[in-house]
Image (tube, rainbow, N blue to C red; front, side, top):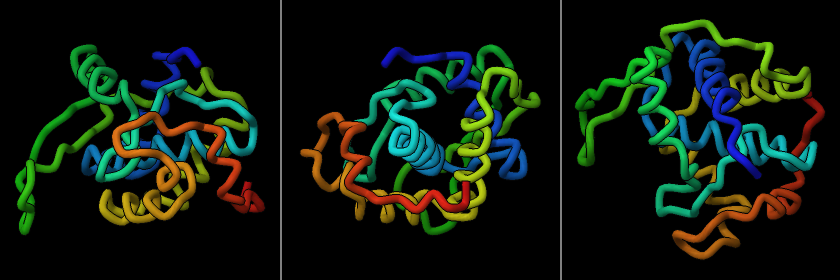
Length: 164
């Protein structure tokens, strides 16, 4: 699946704008993208971003996320900052703020519905909660550590899409 860079950028801006203008934490952003792509694949047999996910200890991580967000920051589409949060023993939390409105013309109706569903269903959870959820699912749990998570494993989740 080739990466659709423009769509990928707009996905991040869209989710960011739906979640109050910012997404706190790279882990949270990575898991929102995972749920978006894997839910969409389970329902429509294709991914929205086209990214590949690897099974890291903190859950599925999209391969191109760092490159895409850095590029977006350079282009002024996204502000990326870091903040040391209370009780955080690891790296500071990355905060992704969107500086523009999303261009929804790049999305199909089904993609917009899925984006809205992901924001509504997972938007209030933090990165750690999303990581725990993803760990319990077939795509992640059936994949060897650090290996690519096959999209086809999404068919073993049995997701309820009645809210679409």
